[in-house]
Length: 96
Image (cartoon, rainbow, N blue to C red; front, side, top):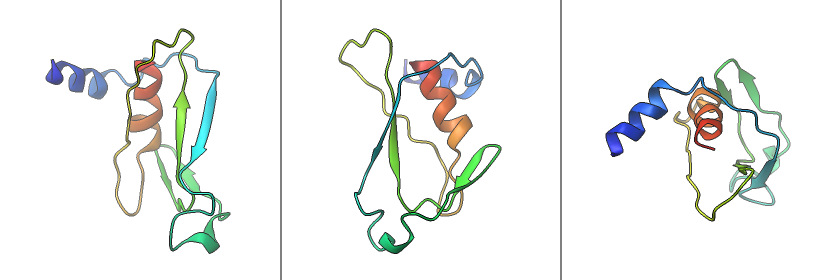
């Protein structure tokens, strides 16, 4: 079952459904620890990646009919780039 879910996430991220109810929750009030002075620096984004994230957040994709369960989608990346759209937003919208 797990392999099927992984295949769905990898091969069907472009079947994205409309999502209107987005809520953003910041992990820290003052920005990431050690980078509080850079909290308000703008993020850099292009096509599929985002970088310069000094105030990380979680975006909630709330379904029309919530049933009490959730899936946490964590886009891949590293210390330089975060694969935000293809590995974060698209799978979250599909699974929603």
